[in-house]
Image (tube, rainbow, N blue to C red; front, side):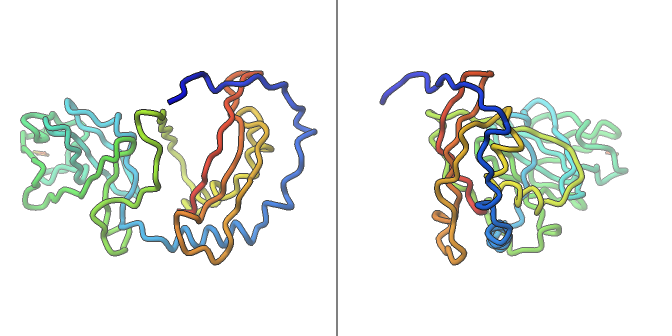
Length: 237
Ligand code: FES
């Protein structure tokens, strides 16, 4: 295996000298890619947090798709999740204690374990090593799947991962559509990307999810003059 620093020096290009990309970023191409992405099964899985945010010594709370959720880990590291309100009188379980693998409510001491109790049924949870997921069947309304559908990732031993969390009000399909327009990166995010070229775009009838992708050559800026060139697939899913 070859090791080394993949960084390169790159002179800054004035924004006005970046080649226009609007001819390539065809609205129809992006719209049909969005339709295919939305038609793929989700199995009702929703991202809850970065895996590293959920620890074994205290519960983690977040609202996803309007549902209050509490998550925690048992001593074996397994991820668990359930409704965020205590079934007794509604205390926030994100403030509970974790004892012996169970949540212990701070208001009156009810213990809630991974198997739940009457009136409080845990959600299916999945940890893929980077992201923690929760399955919300009542929200998703699709056929449940035993695990989220994940794109292939590089081996953890030869890659870095980072998860950013932002709270906002937006249409999820707008976020996905933005991802399916890689061309805007050179123009809208010049502080991050230089030399961005889309070298492969999916065709409308693409059936194989592995081939349904945009392939992008781009250099990420790590300082004003230092960049890291990469080839990055943007999958339609
Ligand atoms: S509200 Fe949780 S035990 Fe009473």
